[in-house]
Length: 427
Ligand code: UD1
Image (cartoon, rainbow, N blue to C red):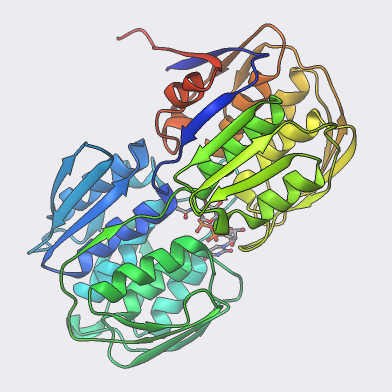
């Protein structure tokens, strides 16, 4: 397994560029299954989850061709869907494989998708996806670890009025994709409002879907007979951008974050400003962070968009270890998302965790040691802690970070970080 070696202490200076959003590219790729025509998607990040998604689509019968320059462009066509299956081998490496369930049910009326199971950060059930599909007329059974779903007589799903008990991002995306080809109108209430959902809606609309309400918690979808091909550019990754903003802030650097959408980063910017960090919107796709005169602790509660994203919680915790005073972090989305805290404590941080609440007292002098990455965003938090630790930090299991951050070593090195990848010896 590859590792990262970080020698901390360098302030980051210069410009770093943000890649396309992983969490947008995943549903957008799944949505290509909804048409027999060719779809071209630009700005797909070069990260492992997207390679996994392309393998999954190819397994189902899609032809996927990838061009690398300047960002990854994928051209996907699925004239025939011959395998309505998401096998366990692929689903176990990427939970977002569940995003093929909605498109398969919409186009074929049948799906055989492995249950994703829990993961390090929590149980992560998909009951709301399944209940909504049942309301749309699907018959669903779970057997041998697989979801067996079908529309009676291989017909079409029916439009339905769905009120999600809880806000779910991939649940909203799955049901949106199911509803676009359903008979009649669907109304989704308490839908997620993340920018990645809006991006998916923009693309579905270009394919011929009738959807209104994007950006709100009520989506109305009028099913159409079929969708056609299109071309789409994925939005910038707001979590990668937020991670870079914190990297600039925590190292006391002067960092410009280019190719981002400042409009998607309101909660992170507000929290940085509250902590004393100077942020500037340079133009509509560029932000700049400058050193805080004094970094002050601030409380954070994770929430659905437009609140502070749970995917930024570990990175914010790293910053809080360097801030003067007490920061109380409350994680409301996932029940077990503090695995990075104990590793930060091993580096010298003062953090106590009690259930969903973590109390961080700072500033603490961090010192480098060997730490284990436990999930994608926890790894990012540990990288940030490593950037301000004395001596060397060795981060193990960085395959987690490779799932979602394109070229993080190269990008951070280009702005002054001393970070290298140690490749696992080939077996
Ligand atoms: C997505 C993101 C992930 C982010 C998360 C929350 C992708 C590929 N992943 O994950 O990066 O951290 O949103 O912003 O976009 N829940 C249920 N039943 C369900 C579905 C969800 O109880 O059927 C619960 C979950 O366990 C969790 C909460 O609802 O506690 C939110 O989960 P959800 O929004 O579905 O997260 P994901 O879509 O899996």
